[in-house]
Image 1 (cartoon, rainbow, N blue to C red):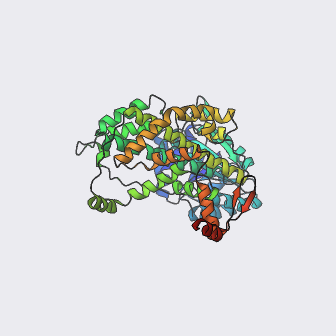
Image 2 (cartoon, rainbow, N blue to C red):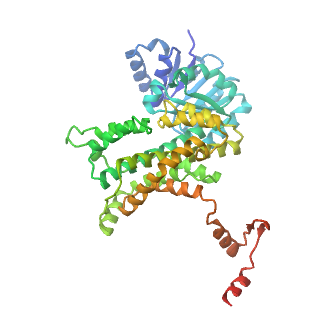
Length: 474
């Protein structure tokens, strides 16, 4: 009996599409699932696409593991958290030294690091693999961010490289570092995605509520923007979402959808990681907060009844909105890459920002024209903050005035712009040589003797505050 090049456990939507992608690229894949019905359904799907000869279905876990060539690479696509740990324990007695488990779901990077450390002494490799692109990407070419055991990455490299998205012929996949590096980068990718989506939604809100545009008119604007500097997957699909019509009512489908956004945790993880690292990521934090507010539908209805409907009118142009979104996106990506750079330094991963930007250029949800520019910028400049890279500094100088106009007009028009306004505040804070934290340090020393610094006099100084207050009163 022939052996499979790789194995995959978990035939949900993402797992099944990933398995079909692997088979389509010429690799034999063994598949397993807790529910045999899903195995049968997958085999039927593979037959329909003429791929059945490259699929080895095995309902028995022991037989499944034995059907994979050594050293084995076993992909697991199960729910994050305890189910991953449970699956590892089921596989562990069946694996041999040099085999590897590839966890291709969205796991918290610290869990991935723990599993890597747990399996390493046992001779079993553990790869935390971030896969971006949704079901479509999994099927036809995702962006793949690999972290974990480098030797076992080489064992799986041929398969993962073949199924990855391509940008001008270059595979959007890379081994990034040991332990939880891959899953951390995927988490921050999702955080940037949250910010990107929220800013797009805010601009749509200005069009709809501030400029009185219907969904079809908004769709045309986003389609036009996708042909310019804002060209990206999210801008492209925004145009499609806005132009879709509900078959039952004949109304724009977007107008029928309840304004309550869901989230699965990666945005929150991104915001927490940024806070723990001491890196400002206001766009991610704002996007998470906006989704949380959106979930409180009944409270928002009651609040509108209490405070009255918003004025909603703005004095800005479509060109202003395009430039504001451009500036906001630059800030969002700036913050995300800064978080990655800080985590890399703390964890000793040695992450290369140019490589990350390159593997995000195709396949992933945040793919955009921006990322090719960012890859070039990081490759040729030592700065880790994009605002200090000459090419992006030029873009911000040109686009930030429009961001300022949109945010100020939105505030006067009572339109919520959580991400756009926080991006502007970050930009203004970052470029302020003399800020106001001197007062905060004075306050901290007054109530807690935390100390402060005076140039030329040293650090850890303290004020004799009671005496100084008494003198000021005289």
